[in-house]
Image (tube, rainbow, N blue to C red; front, side, top):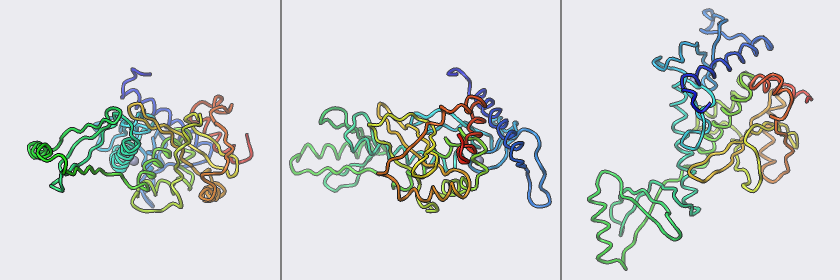
Length: 329
Ligand SMILES: [Zn+2]
């Protein structure tokens, strides 16, 4: 798989998920249509639905010269060791994706830096004796060793400021400042990753459920606060949890998507709650606020269930999506 070209990868993802959509249409009697009101026309051929905007895309949109082509979406972002797992349209990939991914990266790097981790450079500003600030890349490079590299448009100013330290070292004051993004925004970025990872498993069964539209609405509007909670938490680093998707059975029923974000040798495992289908799924999801983080969860790793093997990836999860919430397996 490693040498599969991006073009081939896009094609195989298109085939896999458009087949899944055909199966969902057949099993659930879903109609995929384009246009509005009286002009609505049913689309009968193969189509891929972007899991963020829910627009349908025909195979010709795999051509990257198309005005809004289907693009590879890395989960998590490639800057945090993600792999291309699904397709999203270019508009969605660029619009919400880049900004939220950047916030996650900035937050991850700042936390590592504050925790004293080595070789995790951050973009910072330095001011000496309350003079104008200049940009640096700062990092911890060894035990009690701290390194910074002047950046920006005015290296001469940075140098003159640093030189001023030599003349009166003892009475000098150096201030280092850097940005740490707001936690709420970072959580929505992580929710976006969890939602897309859930789609990679469950396919269109997830998209047609009303609960997922609530998550999408929050992801597409990261500045608003539309959900009772983002359902995002860091997993305890001591616990050996496999990445993937879990069914939480008790105290409530919900899905849990687990993925790892990493940079250099540092890794963090994140869990994102995805509500199960229907009214029950949503009610349980709402209850979750009262349950985290101290209660004991009883969870099953879904990938071990037979139906996944029997029906194959994505379509197997589709079977599971419904079975799990109706008493089986
Ligand atoms: Zn889209």
